[in-house]
Length: 122
Image (cartoon, rainbow, N blue to C red; front, side):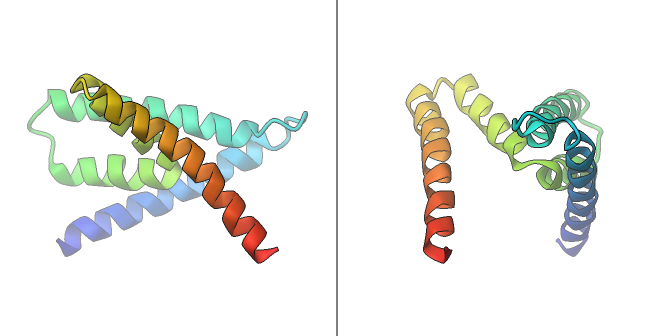
């Protein structure tokens, strides 16, 4: 268990650094749209899809690699990728009502929670 936590922590740290670098690079593109976050979210979704597909297809890949790359790196890079993967899992299992509740609830309550935290401390 300790080894898994270390793998996830290292992957998360690297993912967070990469997120920062992408946002820093993309910050030079003006017009008010958050291009850095947008790029990280889409790239993270593509990456977690690729990694999930590869680890599902090849059973001989160590779970430690999955924890490092999917849970650690992708989780540190963007939690949006995990959110999207879990949404797809709900769709694949035909849990349409849970999918709708999860997606709409996460977005609406997430924005509401940010607003609450912001205004409560302002």
